[in-house]
Image (cartoon, rainbow, N blue to C red; front, side, top):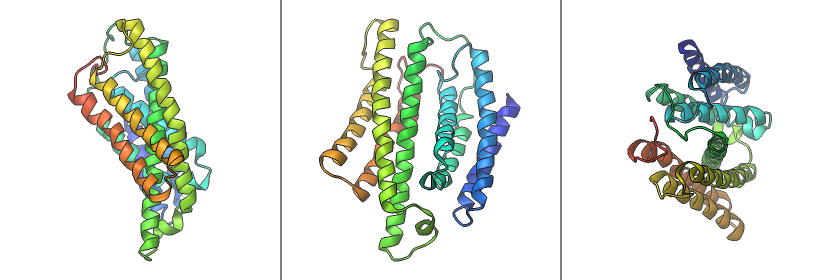
Length: 269
């Protein structure tokens, strides 16, 4: 396990450094992708080992879930990185993934028997859907950051490396919106499957726990984005800032709700 953890971190660090360097020389992006593959394959083996040790899918604890989030983010990026708009996004994604992986290693690694109810297909589907939604929201925020940076250089008439490397503003805006358009239904399904699982385990669909309340708030924030975009015609800078600020709700879920508020979702953080 230690070797796999080290290979994962080394692979993602390699990918992070070279993907940032690729802003100045695109030939380095291929080597960055090799690092991402090394890290992802090592992490896949790590997830399998954790799953075997815990006798279930390894994403119930915060430590395991953060690893699964990193794995899913890199997997999604790998699927679509052949598109030019996505490939250069690795210069933003891989540094974030390396930091998340590094921070996760400071959390509780303990494996042990899970409490009753923290297993089963409904829970697995619930967590997988929520994670994919969070990945979509992260990638949308990244495209929002790229939009703001490129627009800033253009307006200041001080074009530098980002202006030449990043895709056109319209393409960045469209991808940011599409990702939220995909992530919000996934998040909705995650809440529905979570309610079904809660009914089976605790006898009620909704208990107003801190995690549930914040998830509902996050759902409403992204619903607000979709309403502003399609109902009010928000595009460009306003939509980009909205996607970036909306992701703060996801970050609060990670670092505040999970770590500081007690409830049925806070097992073994």
